[in-house]
Image (cartoon, rainbow, N blue to C red; front, side, top):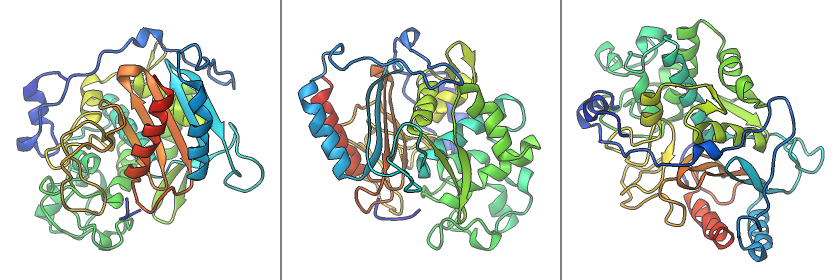
Length: 368
């Protein structure tokens, strides 16, 4: 996957940034009415809905919004308010071309699935299996083709922040030791490098002593009623699920790691770091989450900073999982909104931020 795409103690955040001496002061969390959230039952297809009319949304613009989504190859489009479904639209064939895409059809998350791994690493730390300040080599041994000194500087946090310093200029998906070569010291360079991210699976597996997929299912997927599975696509470990399962995860993150009254990730410090700027190199990147509303951002495959937020049309507090071909998990805490998009490639970029911005322009005509 490459190219053509809070306030809890300042000192703690300085100590725990991806490059500690440069760690930024993160923003405080946005206040929301989380007590109003609805959670769909586990093991059931039931999901409460609320009509857009009840919310005083402009229903006359919904058909135009759906047509825009269809024209862009969208398979699934969901908008949730306070956990309830307001808009749900499906189009086209399912991934196996066995029938029309619907609420039971699965699609790939692509890099939006990085957010699942980030959350799971937080759970593993909470359970005492690892610390994100640990050196990756503590779990994997000699795992790169760098010198021992260079390798020892790489921590789990660097993998979460895309600051491993490993060279992404070749096959950035390749997880073989021979592909993992030195480019810069860990923490000195931000680069959207899939291989060090993918290797987090091996770190979690080594730390927990459990198969990654089994640990994910028992600790994250099953407790919130998600469906889906991880599949290897070449070097990449990709999650496939229904759009509603993606929405369940979004609801969990919106509720700050709690599913209804059950704590899934109770580590507030990790959560706050995950959804805030994690280093000074790319202010719009947390722990594998994209952050809107920041003064600048950097995109995959590029080594220059764009001095504006990711999306001018999207809410400034939006946090996102963004994946190849426009797989979007958008969470807007200030409005208790979740927006899901799954589908085919709307343009030719790895992280289609232009389409993301255009989608929000259309959505804003509906949401008043």
